[in-house]
Length: 386
Image 1 (cartoon, rainbow, N blue to C red):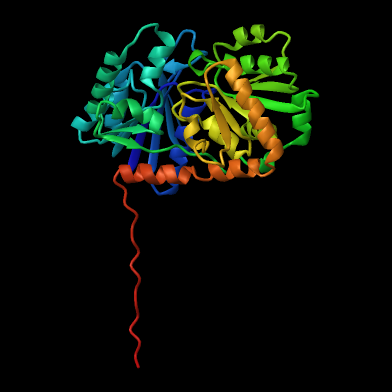
Image 2: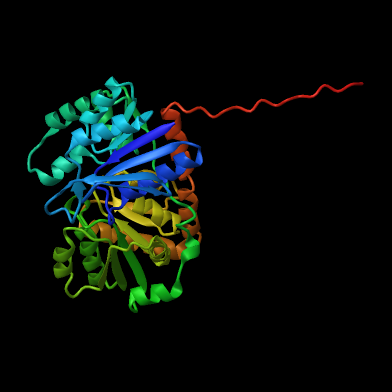
């Protein structure tokens, strides 16, 4: 089976979308399928990668996005689909590429769209008034254009369930349990990053408005007021980079920027005490799951999907959630510090929880959705002669 995936917001420094595409591709190929992914770039280019055939097409750079590009020439994309003739089409962009779903289905190509973000949440972030009617209208139209809508968590699925979407499928993303592990703890790296502080906090993610990265800085300031000796490290870049650096004056914080070396990121996550994921509308947050796989508990926004895999409702939680303000996050971080000191097996339990989200499960569920059925091997029995 040939599977084609078209995605926007993919680039050299993108996070979740890039990781998702690469892992899907490697997984599909390992099961004997062909994978082609089309992404935005500065020019047309085609190359073979470990994750499949990657095709970049000329795209528009979004202002104030930190370099993200968006494919706007849908006619060129349709020509690619006709030329490559995929058996299934996947799309990662609910806005500019949504028309491809209906177009593909009309030509006998089943299609699915990943809802990587909460449209209702984005509207609340950027607009001062309610857009519920528009969100419901858009989501109904989106679902009607594709064979299936894929949500990765209950939080991501909620705005579709609210309008009774019948073709909604919930499939969680995964984590690379080989690349992220407590075994990558690096004492020398931790010492260098902590700069003499007792506790090392890490914020790993894109520095953009909808992810509220300033919340980690607000929490750090509150912790300092309380006399908690902590140092915060930001891993990632984005449009709020300069603003955050200016507002961090006098605080124990280090901005490392975007780090392309995934092994280095894994070492940082494994060497930290606590990972902070303050995004209030995160529909999954791969960085939080990678933190758990690294043995590092997570403090997240109570309004995001992250709490769904922190076992908050059970006695063996591997993190905490907080209201969307600095003081609440500081409370949660302080509580988690005490928990780390009183529960020596917490880091082990973090990794064990992440083991419930292997990429192999995601691949299996996606291939089932695409109609792939594992071939059953029938045993051949020999007749014995008495």
